[in-house]
Length: 275
Image 1 (tube, helix red, strand yellow):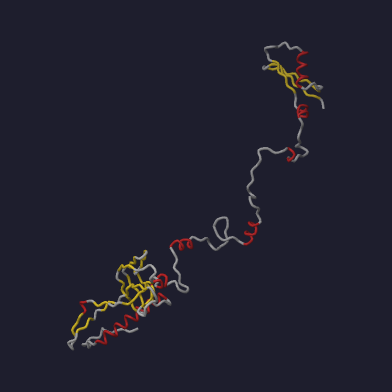
Image 2 (tube, helix red, strand yellow; image 1 turned 45 degrees about the vertical axis):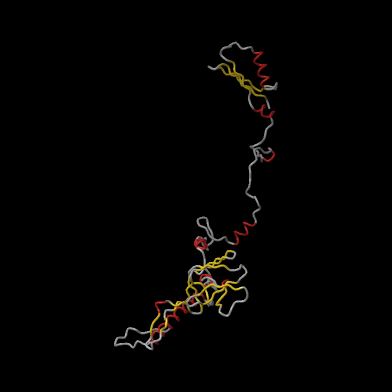
């Protein structure tokens, strides 16, 4: 990479070749950086130079375009062109008036060159002066994505950063699923855990044992004692009426015993039928 050494004292000759050497070094530096960024593209937009086309109206914003090792300014502009015309970029050098100098040989030259590209349009093929068609001019970010280089958005970065660990998942932390767990999961039938317990179910589903059995209403009446209570308000009790009540209580079955208890609450008669 060319470099002009300027830190040597003693009266360095002011030669034009010195400036040329320095300029060549700057151009080489720019080209190296731009080519490294763009990989294989020779022409692309560094910034701005955005073209907007609506029907026959065309506009372009201020910007800079890199082309074959050099940088070119783009000035904002607008014009009309048939919608079917092809837009392309063309070199249009501009000289700054303040750069007009008189040389020692009395000749005048403008040495302030502004390298520019302008947007043109054509109805047929591109002219020889065309540098590139506008539809082939891409921004730097697109040029940077050639080959293995790709941009990612902040949303994509956040998704990557929030991915679960590559370790297997456990009861305490997220992670990956093992193949064994995947096989078990695939083996579960659809809606397998969607169980609703019925409000009622048949008694036939109940398992009985030697100590736990179902009884019929008749067996329940036979097993439960009958109870008749006579209040103190009627201390004289008609035995015939009492026995009739006991027989009715026990469904006219034979009585195996009668137990009469007298207390503050009255007379309590407890009976039971025989086996």
